[in-house]
Length: 352
Image (cartoon, rainbow, N blue to C red; front, side, top):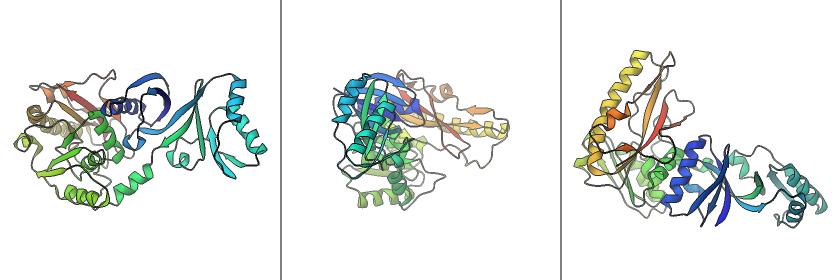
């Protein structure tokens, strides 16, 4: 087992839950040894791919566990550094920074220290990135690439920032599902969740009242990436999903969340939106109950002008089904923040 330090994203609780679900999905044996703020120390029996995670900024492999200055001095004076005349580096341990600074000077290397590198775009530019977590010090070996995700997002044939499920969130939802073979998105929209499932080497099935956007995007994906798995799209209503599917491993979806809100609605408007959505979700869950044992879904939270928040009555939605909120030693739902959006999102996992 090797020790790693993971730097979690802004939704720390959600990011940690995603990590655990990802390890289970990939059959990686793990032990969470410690956590603090946005750092978590995990012992793993095999490797991982940060590109398959939506909520993790970067990961470091532990090099040494020690607080002894003599031991640290000996280790980092003999530690292999990049063979360059100019180095950009970062470390959140002042003593190790001092050791490296003296070493760079001695070896006539121009070294530039960079701080505040939780931004992955900055971290990717470093030649050496070290992270201390308590008495563990690790070297960053993998960094997320949000700019590549954004480019992939925005170069698709069909993209609307106001409507689309982000790539980051899609990855998180798929990992939460722990799907091994396939996923179904019965509100597939422009197909982002399906797209990421295919890139995870899962079969992907989509249903929507209008599948033109999904079809364009998945055709583009198939032409530009090496897609090994199959996908199929069906035009129809999620309230009749069992007409199209007899059985699926898991449903992963961001359903219709109501009208796009430019301004905070008044209380009556917010309440009406929730009531209408609740009726939609109740009918879809009656259908989900016929075809799957697991659902990963987002429900909206609508704040009004008075800042009162209106939520979906989940017990009413799943009434008459065999679904229950999953128990993953994390209290569900988890609130997911979306910058620039009035609407808030709650992520639920339902199991039978």
